[in-house]
Image 1 (cartoon, one colour):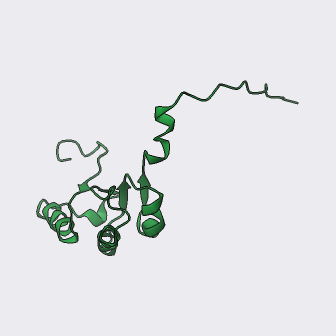
Image 2: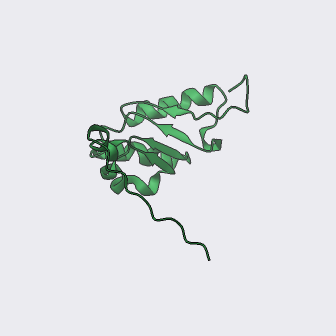
Length: 115
């Protein structure tokens, strides 16, 4: 970040408890990085705990600080609970079976008709 401010980068927060995440926010602040000024901040380590109230509390806490969060690995269960608190998210869960089965047959598309 300091060597080339033109490079796109996204700070990421990790932890297990809400306090862990808050300590990580403080670590960025010590380095003079205000996460509320970043366009997007990654949220890690919640993908396997999305059904828990603690995961939602973590997201609520960070959202309450004014941090625009990108949830890594957020499945539909997590989105149902916290979609309104996330700026964006991604997940490969939807494609799990597609990545492990034969591809769908290719169908020929009709030729476009131009007047």
